[in-house]
Image 1: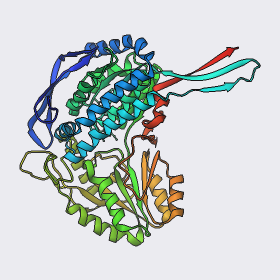
Image 2: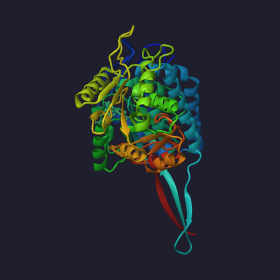
Image 3: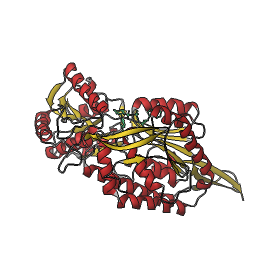
Image 4: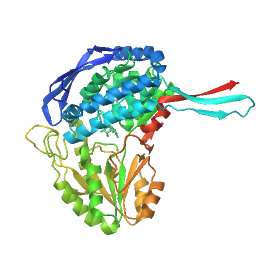
Length: 483
Ligand code: TXE
């Protein structure tokens, strides 16, 4: 069966078996809303509890499996994803609306993440220390946290689940995975591969359905020891309250309002390139998108003119069409939200530079032009995460002002700067109140083998990805031995 081409019927994967749902949902193609991508199973509370119990029962065995066994499973999953990256990328493009090259790139990244954590399974480290008391040996070892509930968003339907599922399994945890409903088929495709790579029944479970029912059941269930969530701030906060009340371990990745600072000494072509890629690629639907372009006064007008020229030439259309640079918005709700922010921007007095119009294409889809505004720091379009192809330029008097503007946000995911000054680049790296900084690079686009996450309102709990993922997916035990 090829993932990319035909209409799929997607079932849950619970305790090693494929199960129909209590109801079904329909996933459609945002590039052509007449096209059904799948009819997928939707679970209720009872079915979700079955998956949680299966994960709980599988835990003792899997948590004691050898690192080699886990490495082999993860390596096999990674190999199959990489071998099928074109079909997976096509499915992703059809269901989420990323362009085909973006979809294939994301699928490849998901495969690489599984390969990386195959290696990490063999490298679980501890410490041995001298005791402060005579004759005693002390060691610190890492153990799995237990059953992990994984709640994923729609914007990276393969990579985000991969960077949560792979470390969870690598460190000996069992998993219940709930994809976002808009991209249930991608979640199912990932599960279909995982189901054939040698895991015992119950170690990995897929349950699709609503956040309110499936997600909330995971959040509240006493058998779920840890929750890894990526999504909106409002949902993240709700999950944090519930998880904290029952003392479950929790990791949240939420929004961003990331700045890209452009100093007067920057290579302006590169700066415009960074802005286009960071603000508009993937239709601006990335938590790392640069939606605030903070530009030093001497180059402000030249930068805006060049950026306007570039985005006016961006090719917007069907995600599978060759040469398309920006696909559709993911769904009607997000399209309306983006449009409402254009209105808010205009009403608050931000200057509309270009774009934002709804577009007609040969197929009915959620198409809009990329939009650019000149804004002031207090404008809502400069403060709130929109999650669409809408960016604004803020003018800065000098470097210090630019840095202050960059940090003037409740979010703290990432921040970029374009400059030829080493001094300013280093100062910015040190003083930007974020989890990730980029110099002369777009804010979006990160490696998979290093930590990912932010500060302030963007993130909560230990970082994801790279070897730092062990902080969340393991718990440490201190052992004392009188020899
Ligand atoms: O997010 P939700 P949505 C932002 C972006 C977007 C907005 C809404 O601004 O416009 O969020 O997107 C599950 N208990 N981001 O509605 O609701 C839900 O089913 C447990 C930014 O998709 O947060 C889905 O699987 N789970 C972000 C996941 O949570 C619940 C990426 C995310 O859904 C739940 C995505 C509950 N009570 C959206 N309610 C980024 N910055 O990366 C929902 N869910």
